[in-house]
Image 1 (cartoon, rainbow over the protein chains, first blue to last red):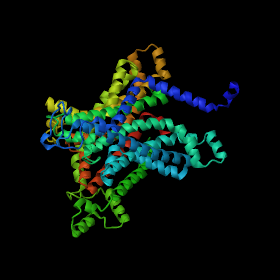
Image 2 (cartoon, rainbow over the protein chains, first blue to last red; image 1 turned 45 degrees about the vertical axis):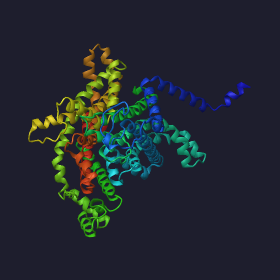
Image 3 (cartoon, rainbow over the protein chains, first blue to last red; image 1 turned 60 degrees about the vertical axis):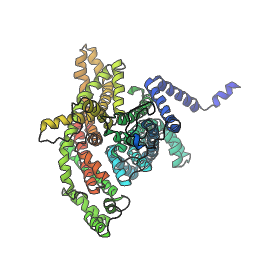
Length: 294
Length: 312
């Protein structure tokens, strides 16, 4: 009986599992990628459980106790408003991850749709869309982000939109190339011959085949998105105060750099670790997909 | 080659046109009335009307577009809303500072990044490779403003070697260069990380090529193989990438100038953004767009010149 069930198992699912296993093996053998993954998980946990981890309310001010150095009660000291720096760094994780992940999600979906649709339908749509993508790509992210924030005004949602717009063209470019090749493949033609509608073909047959590259891009761009969020906050165009964001904390601390360096150096370390962690994961994932790049 | 350059220049025209149009449209979708944004909500009716007239936003959008494009063609980028001075005058004053900083940063990035990249590729998967790779990834993770702050803390606040504020003008060149050091290292280090990673992956590709193996098999010394056979073809993509760095540097220079209170295009842009000086912002964007398009053309030309196969 066992012999007859085996051939009924679809061959693709067997291969799929083994591929995934092999991918995990390559990834987990990469020590720095594993470190990155552990750090990312830790950061997500810190963001979720921030109220339990932070010893103080990140917004409660105390003007009498402003600008204090590290002590046993306030590990990293108190800022110009007397707020606990450590608690603010913990809460800053929320903004960083929220903005980083949501903007990549938004930009990723938008960009992938543009790239895939442009490649699949070709013609004038493709020419127009990809031209637009190239123009957007030629601008430095910070400039695009700054410009969009200048136009939209400040706020968390606007920041996410601004950063997503810098990410959209990258996903469009990456999704566009492979789709061009895929749409000529036999299995896509077969699906078309079977009468499947275009949206179904795109989602069921094209997307799964470019998914890997998109995931690598997503983790690398989450790193960039978090860095961009901090940069815009540093300039004063991020989530408005009093919400704790790393970029703004660093900016506020610069004035006291020689007397209380931790005010701006400590949130910077948190930022550095976070961006580094996502970069490590992205690098590891890229090695899984393209072993030659190692 | 000449035909290629002409073709490339002609190709740049529609791109530039598109970019300038996008900038124009973006500046017109500012929510609410830009005149109110500048003057505040309690401005008098007459003041708003006067400013709208001065900004030209009382006219239909196609007229505004023609004025804008016509102005750019004549080299007129409009007047700043705040200072009422021609925007180009303000840009012209800070442009040398930006060019100086960018140039110094590229110099640092190339002179550090290429050797690091080559060493890590040759000593692949050894301790050195591992350390440099991790450090350069950390360098990529650090935003320019944080590297700047660290340097400012260590070399200015603690050691007192360099000024923390980089405003020295060009009349005293010694002072000017002294003030340039920290910003240049800041921006240079960020780019060094890029160049190192890029050089490493390019060199890894080249080193596994057949002709390098042949050169080795001939018994050539390692150094000769590296300098004569491997580095030369490797330089092609690296040189082309310098163009991309230059564009990337624009973003980094905004942050660096902000940290060191250094005059420059980036600082001017941040100021224009926070003060809602939309005409100045638009003018700076036009200048950036021109720089980006020109850099792209120059890179394409250099690329074709080094490697004629690209021309097709």
